[in-house]
Length: 151
Image 1 (cartoon, rainbow, N blue to C red):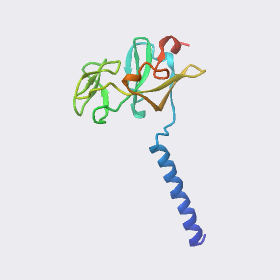
Image 2: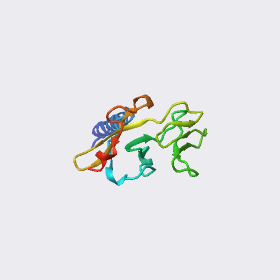
Image 3: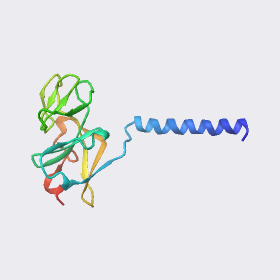
Image 4: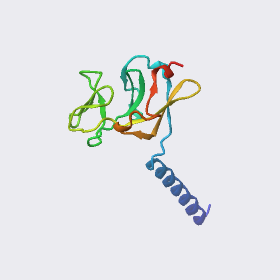
């Protein structure tokens, strides 16, 4: 391979990598199959998908995915070790209930929820590119009814 061909191939690789990175930066995250929706049979906050930046929460007959990013300053949230029905921000002390509503500030809004659906096989699929602030929590696609999750 001569120098000119090497530079052409190398440039193509760099441009391809930059294109892939810009797609990720533009919010093109792949959906996450969190498994059979009926495995979330009890009200609880699951940390199983923290690596994907969301909690899976079953609360009062609804299954939803909530971002692990604090709406206050973007710190990473975790389930409260003292009360597993709550989510806590270790950086600034905000506390959220199991629905994602802020109970203790400085955060002033609830958690961002992500899109969720159930596919034909009964698996819950989380769309990390679709976000629902607290005033949109009743919108279609923000949660799955528990009875639907039992299919």
